[in-house]
Length: 536
Image (cartoon, rainbow, N blue to C red):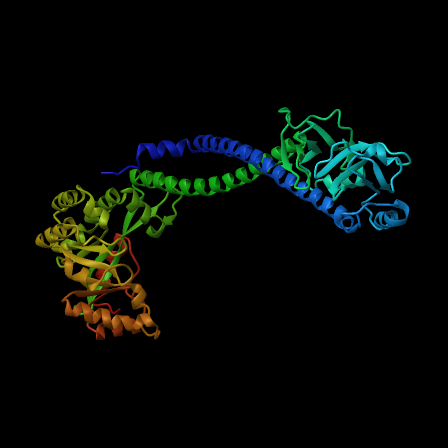
């Protein structure tokens, strides 16, 4: 009769830790591989952004250098005398610019016409495109190399001498993802200038060009970005492999920590939920096997006859420590797992045995048994119930089935209606339990053959409180009377509630005002006292 949890679910539960560790490792490996690829992509994108930034910096520097030079009076005219006509302009520009170290004007034959820089002839490029960058050159009196930026202006070529430190500062990246940056001449296939990050330091320094890898090398990751200022020169940014690996491992470690913390939290919550579910399920199965469930009886008082005419059978669980566990803490699990069927049958048989003498002494006495949707869906429950009723000579009018509203019975499923009609045909009474707290509507009451309606204690206990739920009692009672349903009020605890319900035609009352749920011995004692004329 038991409906066990599938073996697969039990196997997974028992091997939960193993499967969780296996799944965690699998997901972690996948995440690390994805992060590794994403890290490579991010590194490359960072290099690209850096190369674009540095290219814009160099282009901006070149435009700044030529800003004042464009005003020189050398267009369309000969320069008769450098010292008197042009040299003062050159000196003024050089003196007022922190980036220009000297100016050189040469003619189309590459001869120096006017200059502020000593030995300027050695710097003049023999081939000048619209704009040319050449160098590095060693210059007397200076402790660092210089570069010459030349551009055609009319019939002359104007050259701007720039210290290597100016270009070096312009090429320095602000983000630590690279260890060297170069200006590469695509025509000459060589680096014009390179700066490298000094080891064990955050500083950058000028480097000779002879020992550096050209950008065609595949031994290192690099990104190129052409300069807009020059036709054949591009910025080359080389990735720092050590820094890339450092960032990669740091991101991998952080990802591992975050993932493992998240995994542990999910594991803890999942384990707690599963343990609670499966441990409760196993405990319920063990309690069923060891007969730890037992019935108690909530007496039902008939206002018209002024005596107790029935009881509601309630389930209790006495665990192996002797503690009594109320059904609220486990009834949902029994219904969800199917254990409600064997537990109910066990309670019914024990109740039949205990109430046999009561039924014999009080032929009009009845017992109420709670049912839920699971009982109707089980193919064996009612056949087993009929067998037990025959075994203990229980007549149909002595059993009232109280169908809980907790789980709505599908009105469109003919199985439920057919089974209820069968019970009514056999002489059993049917009650809708806890009305008003669940899903049942008037159409629900009309659909099924109920003959009793139980008002939930939530509404009964609102009597006299002037709460909104108090006003609903009149509506429920009026509706039940119109549907010709007998009314049972549960949770009656005060004289005021008794008077109100009796005055409104509610015949059957149960609650602590009359009695708490009792064992069979206490119930028999109560019936002998109260039904023999003792006042309530």
